[in-house]
Image (cartoon, rainbow, N blue to C red; front, side, top):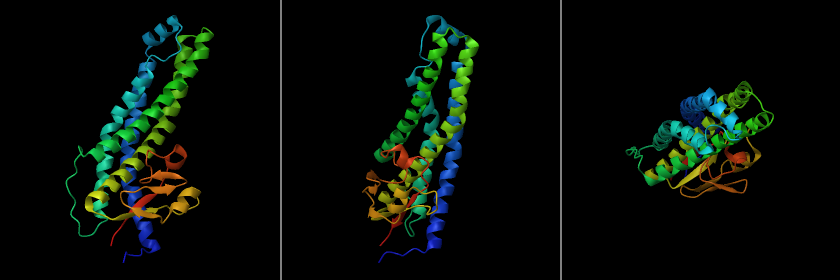
Length: 252
C-alpha cells in the first residue's frame, strides 16, 4: 500500500522542490541577462545603427536567428546543470535507491534540453521582433541614430528584467521537474503524483490537478493538456509559465 503523506510532508516536498529550482533560476537569470546585454551592446553599435539608417532597413542589425542563438547558447550550461539537480533530487526522494551516474548524452536528457532551449529561443525571437517594430516608425520618419538607440534601450530594459526573469523561471521549472521525472524512470518508480502549492495564487487547473496520479512514463491531464511534469514545454504558456507545482514519486 502506498504511503499516505501528511500535509506537513507535502509542504516539505514542495519547499524542497522550490529550493532546488531557485538555485537554478538564479544562474539562468544571470545567463539570460548576460545574453540580452550582449545583444543590446551590438544593437547600440553606432556603425551598425548608422548603416541601418542609411539603408532604410526595418530589421535590427542582428537577425532573429542570431538572437535565438545567443540566448540559447548562454542558457545551455545552466539548463543542463539544472536538469542534473532535478535528477539528483529524484533519487533523494526514493529511500533505499542509490543514484546512478548522470549521463548528459542520455537521449531523454538531450531531448529535454533541446525542448527547454527552444522555448527560450521563442522568447528571444519575440524580443527581436519588438525591436524591429520599434525601429520601423523611426526609420520611416527619418529619425536619428540617437532615436534608434533610445528605442533599443526601451525594449531591452524590459528584456533585461521581465524577459530574463520569465526565461529563468520557466527554464528552471522545466529542467528541474523534467530531470526529476527522468530520474524517477531510471530508478524504477512506478507512478508520479502532481503536487501544487495549494495557495490562492495557484491556477484553478493546477488545483484540479493536485493529487492526480499517473504511471511515471505517462502524462498528466492538466486543463486539457498532456503534461509529463510541471513546466513541460509541451504545454501552453498559460499552463506552464511561472508554475510552482512539482511531482512526488509514488512508491509501493
